Image (cartoon, rainbow, N blue to C red; front, side):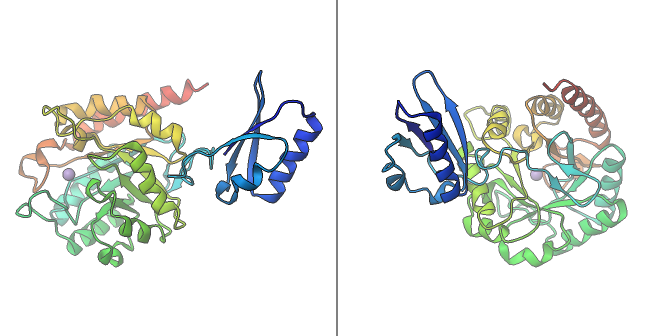
Length: 339
Ligand SMILES: [Mn+2]
């Protein structure tokens, strides 16, 4: 809420008004003195502020209330970056580079363990693997489901890498007990009942932007999770649908600094689904980290040509090694040049 004060009031009178706002409501008041007026920017628990009541104060000239579409995910509500502890040695956010790598789908114990070992050795700090696959066609491989989760947990036990996997329906929640990060895929970004249930957990949620959803809609979906109590949310830009057919989607690179400006939540980028083209993974990843992303999630397969899903866009573990090294150098450079 923004309150513009009338002219002619003394510093003391203004201070008394600020004090009464702070004591009556749990808000932070930021005073801005402009050449023409004194403006108060109220942040924090602004829900209980009643504009009618406040406008009755003599000192108040006008009140502007920002739309309340998203609140707790907003940087107005919490200025410091949210850092998410994966209970491994890795934390997502701030100056850390998060590299999540693994196959589109978990296919076999041999496949997931081989990829997990490789990506771990090459710098990944989290393993991805789909067990429930929401495929566009019902005739495509739908994932190994429960068995896929079990194989992913075996790879986690082998390598120590935290694991991320997608949930498609709240009925499967019990199976995700040992999954470290639950992913909400692009197609479920506005499955509000699912989001509300995930909001009741004490577990990180990776929330992907829907292919036809705006930045504000992504933040409102995150608000569904945080409003239920779970603030461990990682936002993911994965490309949006445009008229450009060359790439699978169009990576909306500007969403990264915008999300970082509007929200305190960490942001990662999925260059695999954004582009659908293996040779674009490296430049798009570099661009993402340069724009302030906290990490990437990338599809890596040991035999891309025989993968059961998304093999055409997967990179090999050795290409991942090359990209991970470049990104680490880039992140170190960016961290050392922060103002
Ligand atoms: Mn995929």
